[in-house]
Image (tube, rainbow, N blue to C red; front, side, top):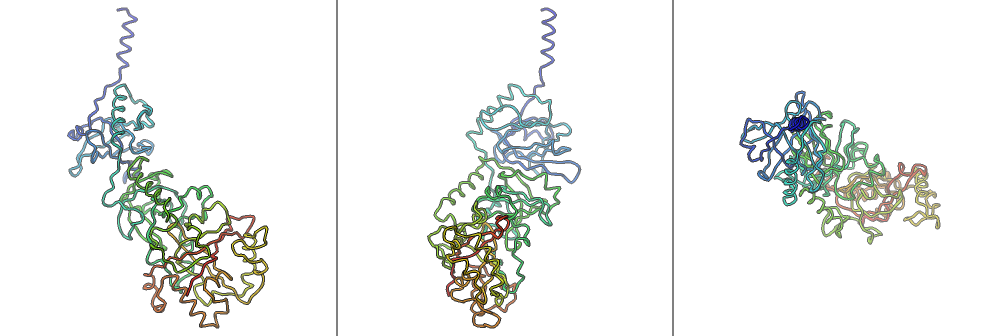
Amino acid sequence: MDIGSSRRERKTTMAIPEQYEYLRLRDALVSMGQRVNFYGIVVEYELPKTTRGSDVMCTMTISDMSYDTPGLRVLIFGDKLDSLPRVKVVGDIIRFHRVTMQNFNGIPQAVANVSKFSAYVLLSGKKDDSYEPYQTSSKGFTFEQHDRNIIDLIRDWIVTHPIGTGGGEYLVQIRRLKEGAFFDLCCKVLYVHNHAPDYAILMYVWDGTDAQPVDDMALHLLEADNAYREDMDPKHLPLSRLSQDVLRSLPSKGTILPVVPDIPSEELRPQLPPLGAWVKFRNLTCRIRHGSYEAVFMRESKISLLGPDSKLVKDCEGNYQQRAFSEEAGLPEWSPKPLECLTVTDYEHVPFSTLREVFCHAQVTQKFRCLVQVVAIWPVKVTDFCAPSSFRQKQMTLEAHSMKDNTAGKVAGYGRDLSQINKPNGYTYRIQLTVEDPTARIQAYLCAEDATRFFNGHPPADLHNNGIVVDALERKAYKLLGLPFNNKAENSSSLRKHSPPWIKCCLKSYYLDKENPWSSRRFRIFGTTLPG
């Protein structure tokens, strides 16, 4: 052997990387107190968060062919968030070096400290994907042929053993939420709001189901008139403040649930999932504010990312698709079947639209038929339902011009001349109804002859001097709110226990300012009658 050959041999020998022994997870479980190396499939992953000390951490549950259920829980600590693994999709593969096996309350777990001695490599779990890791804890990682062989073996196994995240007894849908209950939730993150009053971060999530109506949503006629306006309800998804692109991306059906933090925002921010991600929340609690459900994220709560192939995700998406293409697609899940309503409309042949479809429609002026509940009426006093005609004349003229038909000089959908709006007639109705379905809450105006038609023959008048009409209108208002008229003298706390009935109504969108049509858009009830 010549010198050159000898040098080449020595160089080759020096370049041989360290050979690691990788244990099956089942073998790692009996290696308590030892530092071990292993591969695993990420079946659950919780986003990084700060600890009560100076560290940051994240947790995950992994499995392999030898230990599929319940999987091994791994706690990963680091000195900064960037050092922790960021799993893209549940079902990806992770390799750990030098993690310590421990026993916690009789349950085995692994602990990794990437700022000291541990290391990891993250790769896709999909068959035929690249062997190139998408994240590593160190630039000096090794990856040899035997690593590729292990990856191939695991990927082949994943194909025949889809990764499923267990439901558990606490897993519920949004439609099954109950005030005060603790629960887990599989859902999609639709929007994150970082500037809500009193709350630094709000997450809005969705699973395709409708939250059930709240029994105490109906307001007594004598209560404060602003209680259900959007600006008094900052945790309700602020549809009016969202861009058109965001509005178009929202699903048309299903309640969007706000998740409200009960921890400092700096603790929650590292855990925020990306928009559009499917996640599993653990240990949330439910409360009701302003007549709507909201989930509360506590210090004990956790967020786990879910992959698109997760059984929980597929179940949610499948159920929603089945609902979206059903004959009752536009109806709330909690509406009575067969459908029973207090009202009738002039357009019974028109399919129902959800209020979110109304709000998110691509055209600023449009007509709809909806199934809603009336949760508030303004003015709060029936005697103020009517005002002198001149009070409404200017506004109604603006409304009419926004809906003007270019060929007939009529108000589209109303069938009357603009001149009829401008003609004073003593008094006119001016009422605002706050209407709600599981998808949204909006304010709709009930005015002029549309209100006369709605109240079935009670023309506008000076109600301060007309006790008979006031009594009839009060009965109708109480009926809309689901309140017993014969007990109207009771205190409001007892009246709030009644849930408003469902009503059919025709809604029309219009604008007040042609220079700013979207920001000046309003909604109005028409073609609807409350018999009796």
